[in-house]
Length: 357
Image (cartoon, rainbow, N blue to C red; front, side):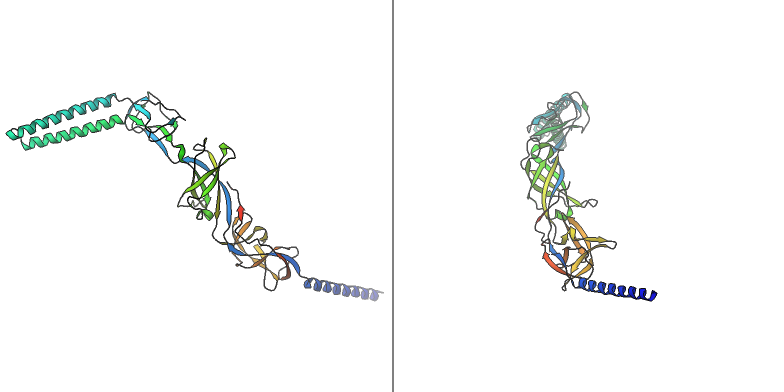
């Protein structure tokens, strides 16, 4: 009885092993259907919305060049001014008196010089006396010009058409030399200063048009032009700075407002794949590359920058390599695959939207 049971068990094991071998052979002969993408080296195009701050490139701080008491400041914050308008007037009583004194000294020096020149033919005045008199006239003239300049500086005029943004002093205040009294800016010189990734900065052209939106003015878009690119990159953020000039500046726009600039740019030609193709395990990033014999081979890769749904391939693949994009279920290394279709994900000339602040 015991021998009979042992014979039955051995028979069942033999049948099971034969069944497994047949199943393995059947599975080995079956080609797994997959979809692939091809690695290409092309530029990645991205559209980014970056935030910036409006600034006025033409801003002047008004300082006094003479000390004294402020007599009048006729304008306040928000007032519009015209070029040549009187912005600040200082009490000039002492300065005017100094000018009158200088004018009188100049007149007297000129009279003395003229008198000595008339005495020279009669030898009643020496060459030395005439030379000293001439020098006295020049000194008196210089003193007069100095006092005229000081008197003119007691009246400060607007350097251009603009708007008063700061008023820091009031009539009656006594100011020392070079006190900050007013700030004036030109509303027609507004720019948006924004920071852009170094990856696309080199491809942004001067005088190119961009769309700009100002949060305080709603959803309306305005025309902007790239007028300046800064030559340095911030080593901490790896970003460069560009200036976008509003043409023209919209009504209601002011320095300090938040702006959003939509910029299109391209990278240099890069090898890239769809992000979804990249797999991960304990050894790192990998893909299944399909060789000429339609074998799926496990291939480790090193990736770089990601723009939208694509990622740069730095190491592990070459241009033209086929990589499996769909059909990963139960896929093993060196498995034979059947390419069901080929997705054209590797073309990089389509725009990738990437909205970042």
